[in-house]
Image: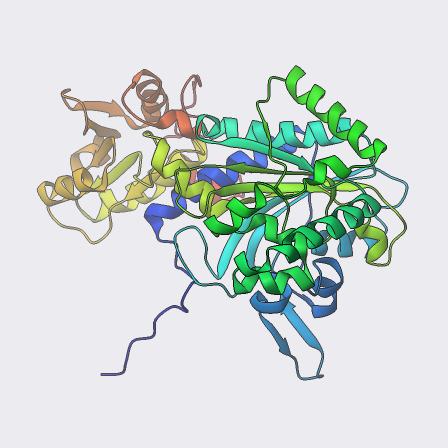
Length: 459
């Protein structure tokens, strides 16, 4: 027997029981983003390595240690995308979408970083990002934060999250602060771990994000970036806080909040939770007014965020009780050759008449008693039963599997209306997640043979 092949470490399969939750989260993201007039953009998974070196920064952990980079057959260095903003900016510049115009763009998909896998941090991970180009004022920052809050609210996650904000100011104010921070930390270098000593030379601001408790204790007395902000950045940050308060969005100013990417300026933010262990950031972003010019475009103000879908799903599973499942709404069983042929047509007509309906058509034959067992195990709410007798009378049996109700015999032509009424009346199911409640239906299935004729005629 040959050895079985396992998935790559940190790159996980998503099984059917999980994908239904992912689809629920992804659909929520799409709906809210579209309601804010954001348009989807899709970029390649592979990009030129230079894109990420120039945007993220060569002294960052991502570029130094985490990127999947290789040479292709033309000796060109390519990288599996580790984040989405640089890809979106590159595409915007290349296709003329950004200069002197406002663009609201969103994207969703897999990203890759070589990290030590743990819960909520994988080597292949999924993000949904939103980017707003062409507006430099703090009202844009406020609306982007409101958008992130709306998504998290729709997923019922806000009570489990805290919004932290900070301002990194301008490049000049950051440089002045950097000098003072380096001076302070150099005086206490013996209290820094090896990683922080390296960052002291390459990227001092990243030390503020250290998870080492002794380093965090040292930082309590360090200079704070907010005290070095230029006047314009201070005004921008103050106005943003006013907007957030007026919108009823709670937040905490975290003076040590920095982002692990060099392109950020002014506003930065994170939505964090204590319910996922070490990987507590589920959404993060900020303003990056210099990145478009840095990547070869004309100067364009911009800001955005990325949500970690893996972590959003984990948190959703932890805090929500009623989540969707893949269970069919209807289990359609039949007995006899002619009954199966008719059920094949009727099941498809039901799907056409009620598009959100999930119909499981039993295949493989067998006694009805065994089919009922399989219907019950499937989690279906209704069983439809078709035998030779029902075929002759153009009726169908309808049995509720989760309710103590007698089996009914219904005309095949009336089955759509019957099912629609039953779904509206049912209070114990999750049909609301699929838009099946509060819909009135007077639809009727065509009599036996008529549907087949219409299909043959293209009707």
